[in-house]
Length: 113
Image (cartoon, rainbow, N blue to C red; front, side, top):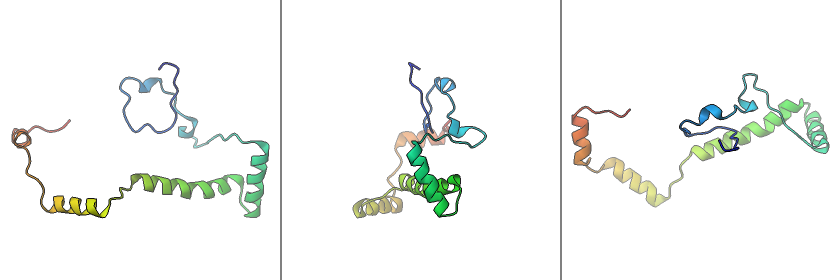
């Protein structure tokens, strides 16, 4: 792969190249994640966790998981302007006619792979 290592979720198929991509540790069966911190950052997190009477893992997960869920929701949401919303509704109520080629293929019984 020309010296490039890929980490994280890959939402597309890299034809013929996925077998050489190492599995990130975050995707391992154990569910463990390694986090490298400066000692002062770890001390800050540990202090904040202790003030909330949580262990470090619970504190980090409590802070990070809601943010991760919000970012996923935002990425999966489509925000349309009023003009675009009206256009989509109009197309749903009055869809355009299917092209002749599509009708012919459908009648012939072809399906997508």
